[in-house]
Length: 173
Image (cartoon, rainbow, N blue to C red; front, side, top):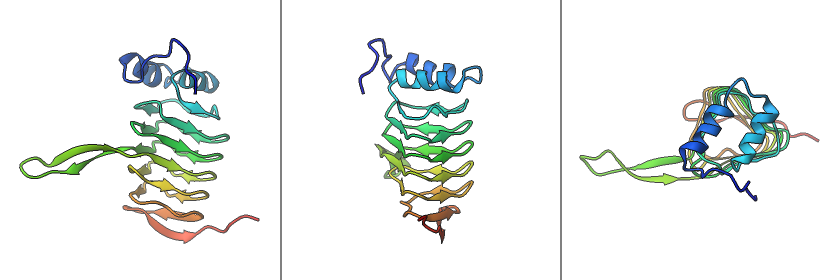
């Protein structure tokens, strides 16, 4: 995607201010919010991003007909891709980095970013957490409050901590 020539560097405080203060404000209309995010380098095919969302960077794709509800936390230091017609509920957290365990006396080691992909026609319930490197396949539901630590196969309802497949979802015609 070609960025506006005055596009601020994603690592800058200016980028963070536009993304997480100006665009995240409840005073900004959805379509204007989407315009600001696009100007910052996000690949949006939907204008439905509600106030209070936090972004750590710009490798972010939101598919046609998809939505981010109020207060989502997108730690997109690695790419985050959300497919078409997917709903992301209130205060969902999508995390794209982790630290490996270390040898004592240190408890955390090397920092590793890993992309997250959420397919098309999914629903991610309020307060769910998607951890680094996870793929949620098409037509999945992730229950509210679930913590997704592993990939989710298509047409399934996932819930719990850690999330597991609770049942199959019937496929459409």
